[in-house]
Image 1 (cartoon, rainbow, N blue to C red):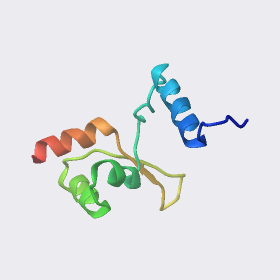
Image 2: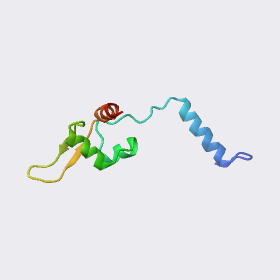
Image 3: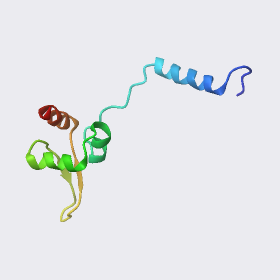
Image 4: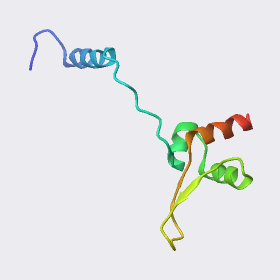
Length: 88
């Protein structure tokens, strides 16, 4: 669709504004975060997160198969925020 006198950029911006006006909900906070997501959201490095776990300041869940040595470590966002608040 080509409109005379209207740039494609302006049409795209109008579409974005109309979506924002409809009140499209933002992405919900996930129930659990992985270490990479913690770094991107809060700026905490992996080694610092594991030090908080070792010190007992942060709780985590490790999901791994029976007899496996490796797994996925998950953290609740509210636990992370509480640990940050306690450190401040």
